[in-house]
Image (cartoon, rainbow, N blue to C red; front, side):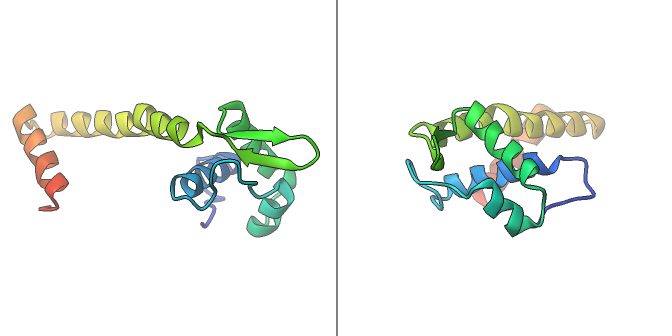
Length: 124
């Protein structure tokens, strides 16, 4: 992953989202230790406090848990939490953006649904 240091999204959020993707792709599995804040800081050439903030965010959401003195580990519910979060936040936002743009283009609901069906089938 390449961090967007000039973008609007805070680096700690980018770190958290990367870690979520790694969990979804089974690069980190249930009860497996994840990278420490220092390892992440070294990997991405960022301040360890920034990396820690990303890990803390995931722990607060129940995606990671602490083993005192050892590090952070992937929780049993991590995948389901991430999937629910992405469905209810990310995907809904994209759908709302799509509907807004379709409205600007004066498209009907049927036209939008048709485009989604084509894309789902890989026709677009």
